[in-house]
Image (cartoon, rainbow, N blue to C red):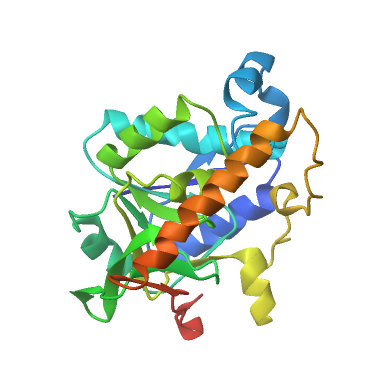
Length: 260
């Protein structure tokens, strides 16, 4: 399976971090140049931005376009790809798990990371052997640092992208038509979350994408954004109702001892 990581030209420290993890895992990672915010054209911004629950920052739009370029490659091919961001802290078990995950045919999108938040998932997991399982995801909202994407899933994401962008993790996890699954235990965690465990990895875990944002003002100009957010909250009610049947609301297990 092709493994790529998205990395800005100036983020040399993170590039070295990912190369070090690849060497320790005995895997080959291919660096893909991330889109700089300064490279985004006015036409791209006008076409993609302004159609989510709030306007996207230039950094968020650059991140979206970086992933989008990979979705185009995957959609044009016949095999899945493992997409990583350059702050993904990876499990020692990744190399052994990948062949099992790659052949799990029910998934169009298979998330490998824990974002340490609860998500709507199936009550029952599917065992893949050797302590590895996958669980159907009905609704999630966070995390785009480590995922396997199949061509069928990439085509669905591209079709949705024609209607506008969102923060890439919200975009990935918000598409109900995508057959989404979660690896258990998690095989990746973002560096800023790993730092909360008191663990450092030798890189600055902060990014401009994670910068705090104030509440969007209630103005006529912002009314479409607030309407979309309200619609999202209403749709979430259906997921809570699903908890009466096949779904549960839980976080993904993370085995700290598995991580490099």
